[in-house]
Image (cartoon, rainbow, N blue to C red; front, side, top):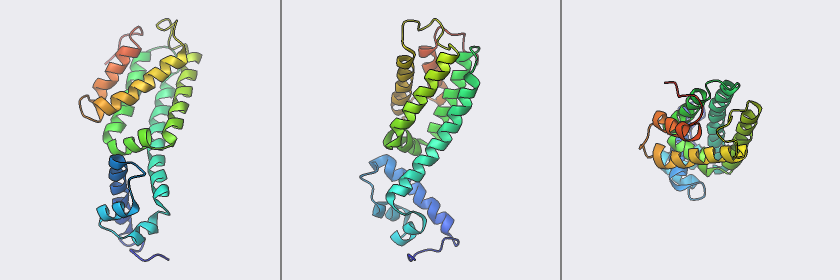
Length: 197
């Protein structure tokens, strides 16, 4: 067995510290530029301690990405469940976007990893687009506002805006989650009923 701190002594604190420092380093330098030695140095721990909790840098990165995706999907699925039906679309989309953007603000480094850096991020966004297209098509959420625009183009455009504006406005603290959610809703759902605040 690797030498280092025992798992049950102050191990939970050591593991948490490794996770925190890994999130910081992965989000600042990316997966490939971050080494295990960088993580343990930043946490002021040893490499044997690292291996008590993680098999490899890849397993640690995957754990962080899984944590992000689970939380993101919980928020997204909760929002989608509310979207069924064609009433109050703006209000429901606003609430879902505000919740997603609030999560991003509360977890900026984890967001950089899970929404932008990880290999699974693109697959996750494809799945999100598929789910949104399905909901919008089944419930005719677009209505007449985009009768000449393909639903997939509309959804991909919406997700692209979410990605770009998260980087340029939200994570740079130029807009709050509420402000940015309202901006996006006003662009993409302008012809739906008025946003109820």
